[in-house]
Length: 354
Image 1 (cartoon, rainbow, N blue to C red):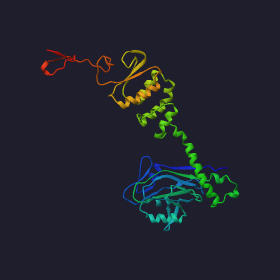
Image 2: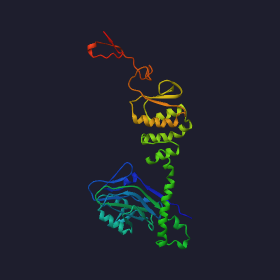
Image 3: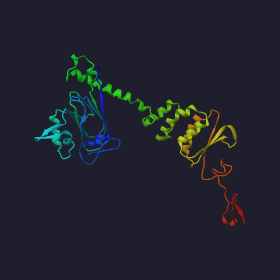
Image 4: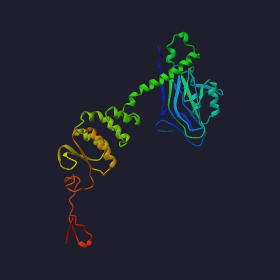
């Protein structure tokens, strides 16, 4: 029977509790190289496997390194969280997280503990390491910009190996190392499958997949007229809007997703201004915007009644009573002014001669 794989995710809080030298920690839990140092170090406090002789399987994280930069990873395990140093009992965590202790001294302890180490990789098999506690050190060498994130530890990582009869299960054998390669591939595939729910969720899906999700719902989104936030709002409301497609409610819902400006919908108004049983006008109380006009009309055409035509009108600060204006909206009554012919006044209906 396959063993249960435990997964430890090392997030922002645990990284903040470690010793960072030459790294800065972002709110997203990412480590960025900082300063002028050529050696950037990370020491983590112990991971607790909660049982003696806990078998550790794999350490993985994501890394982006600049040119001419090198990456070194080390890890060792022990059932005890203390050791004797210079005749005194010393806690491992206190030792590794003490900035006053020389790095060379810490390096020597990793070597003495028979650590697993690798260079140039961000995925390290820990087969053969056993102990309740696990300590990890990551080193980046060189000048430049580097980023480390998404730290994970698995215990164990031998689902394939442990499913074979006892005669095949010999620690350190070639067969175990050979199967570990396929087991890692299987674990990565399983993680992607487990994360599918997040990929199709409008709140957590990557921005590049949002147009794809919209296409699955039958929405056309040609052009970049919707920002990421509004696109997510549209996807979350898409099902309810599609269910009432062709109604006033659908059109109003689309308009309020695309713009936060006050919106008024007038039915039976043709683009020419005449009365029509099929057409309607959408009045938006904001300054004219060609990009908003094109994108909004493109979306409304997908939700309006089939035979209808839409007329989008942007309302300025004021208007005339014969230009889509009501007495309480988009209109103002102007006081006539007196003027003289030689005073530069225009005879536009608002000026009377005196």
